Image (cartoon, rainbow, N blue to C red; front, side):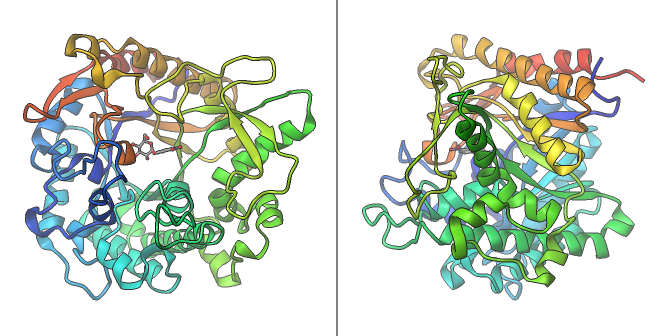
Length: 476
Ligand code: PNW
């Protein structure tokens, strides 16, 4: 028995990936509606217009969670359902608020703790059009704070708030590679607008300010009466040196994590960006004013960790180009000795390597003083799952093994390494809209039949988590 008695576990999703009903109850457009409509941006040309139809199937989804034994559920709120145009002087949409208030009531009624993500990438398109969305240092943080306040007030029963999901993805994939909405990049064959060398660092900075404002608002005006907690969720992969004998590869392993995670976590825990980033990026990386430091430093009640995979890291000897965001290194699946990091999945960036999870939990705990960690996402896709017959899909032994290996690595980090982990949310409850990969890549523990009325079929992995956690969580 190696996980704490009150350990929370369950599943995670995000609004645009599961809800559908994009024109229902007064919802405004988000940047993902706009981006999905551009030919060539999404692998199968799809959008989240219907997705899992979860907006209309909250009862069914809650029953599913209950039947799987989950005591927690992480979901995100679509900002443009709450404030269709997004801004602090724009009209508020009561129908959108009512939907989520009822959903939270129903979850609690079923004995399931809600973890609410305020921002899982579906920015109101109105804000992108009005002032450049996340690029705007003055307007965006204030609009986010206002939106957050509306929800803190409307949903006092929620005890776990996450401000931003994976700001690395919003910044790098949204403003450097252009792989995600709003698709900015310096590559003019992909986008008419964008500056890959500068915009991502501006966006990251603005997200940190917005996070800080929302946390301050919660702590000052809501936490005293509601008693909940608030933090940010960061994504990052584990790193192993391509050549363990080469100190430059070993150093590059830390630098890779700093460029991915410490970019956001160092300001939150220390009040400044990592030295390695300042050195490489120079004045392209914004600096914090003393007021900004006061706002951001110490702004996590918990550390939200999304984690999926690991890479071998090989340092580069030539100076980095201006659009480099990795820290001047290569990420590889094979090391110098020819070992492979893990088996292939449907996601080009994901290969299971559970020891990396334990190592990264230790790395983060040491650097940030053993904070309380909530694992807010962890999971895998399966190579060619979308092309398999249903009988084979529901026997997803590969995913069962992934969860078994990763949750056991987590339990060891908790029991043997002193890592303070208190929650685990598997990604994902349902197969869903996997962003630029569309519906071809499935991450769900539940199969969703998109051509037959979004019927749900729990896979073997869905049922494997309850016995796994029962065997690991201390009884008293
Ligand atoms: C996370 N990458 O995203 C997100 O939070 C989820 O919405 C998503 O469905 C899930 O992981 C699975 O992809 C990521 O390219 C998307 O490295 C892409 C990457 C990493 C994380």
